[in-house]
Image 1 (cartoon, helix red, strand yellow):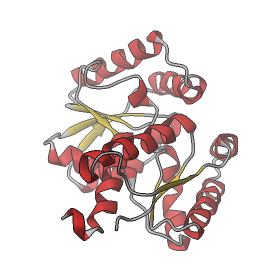
Image 2 (cartoon, helix red, strand yellow):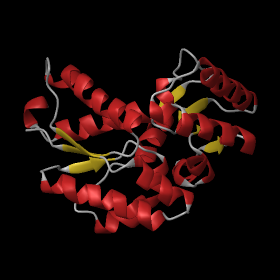
Image 3 (cartoon, helix red, strand yellow):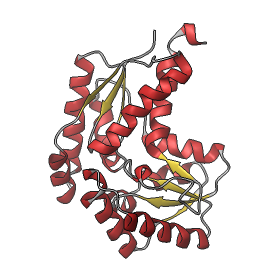
Image 4 (cartoon, helix red, strand yellow):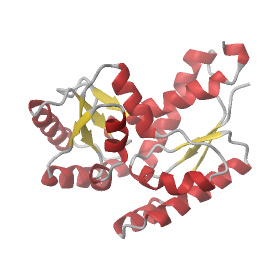
Length: 235
């Protein structure tokens, strides 16, 4: 019997891509139309943004914890959050959480190590890129990183928060992220972390001058592996 995956949602497009990946790729591992049980709870994105804008990580954590308790009550066995930014509050959540979590940055960094990358370009919201969410995990594994310049961070943040989270995908946005990626490649990066779960909707290896680490799908696949390992019939 596979484990029940609980998704703590934040922004709709990233959460939907994660959910869809679990359901569609589950069939590759479990058989036609099969996937582990999945439940999701998603507070209003506006509530998260209000907390982030005032630097209220405790508030972010309380929203995450409320979702965790709701998912635990309906039978989830472990939790994932397809939103990189709010992982900054996860250390405040885990000691009080009713269930264990997979950490998105740990999943992405493990993939970077497996693929032999050494210097990672970071991309994502301004909150994410300014934070230590990825730097701490990268440094712990002996990897280095580069952040976009402040004006680049601001524009990528605008693209994410004014376009991507609303399902708006513009050629101009793709071109801008490509230019930032090209600059970071020239600066010495050998891969790009798509550290916003909406970025894979506009950028992938076919559109990037650097190999991309798709945090959304990598998290979904890690959740699948964890859920399926619990089922002796799949071994």
